[in-house]
Image (cartoon, rainbow, N blue to C red; front, side, top):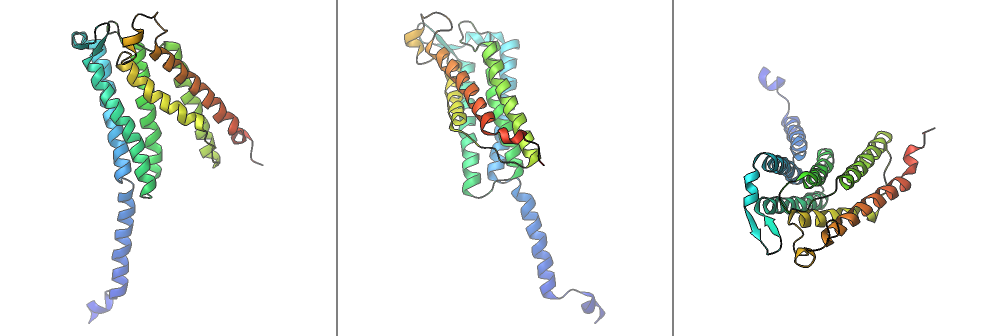
Length: 239
């Protein structure tokens, strides 16, 4: 019959269906579980950052809610931000681990992950630089500028490298810098707890938490300098 003659053979039809499913799977794999975790982290970070600045500038009454530790206070709102920060930091490790374990590394994931990292760390440092709660530890403006400038320079280097199709060499100092950041930020949010039991009467800027922030800044600068030195080949013009 004519209809049968015009219809593709069963094997060909199966191949068409398989190709369509395969193409759909490839599209869906872009938003796999690791990438969804990264996306959820970005959403949570943005909401946290909005909450940080709104609470600090427009709801000063929140400073009345705190846990008294005798010589210092832990503000409830900063305790909440600290919890969200720690969870976001854990998911930062989790999505990368799952992506590598399940072989689900995608270009979208590689694009979103550093955005989430910079939002989480740099914007939280900005908040800690301008927070106005009474007696709350903060981070010096100049240190925040150094930390953010370092990240911007390294990001620019990565863009140049990607444009030239070159691979950048990593260094352990960069990972050490990340560890210090993940330790320093919760300590400042918690107003120096637990070290504040010891150093609450020490001069401003000389608390144990302050020195951890200083070490974090030094690690950031050193890791950035090493990163640039180890990847000077990126700046060589291709012949």
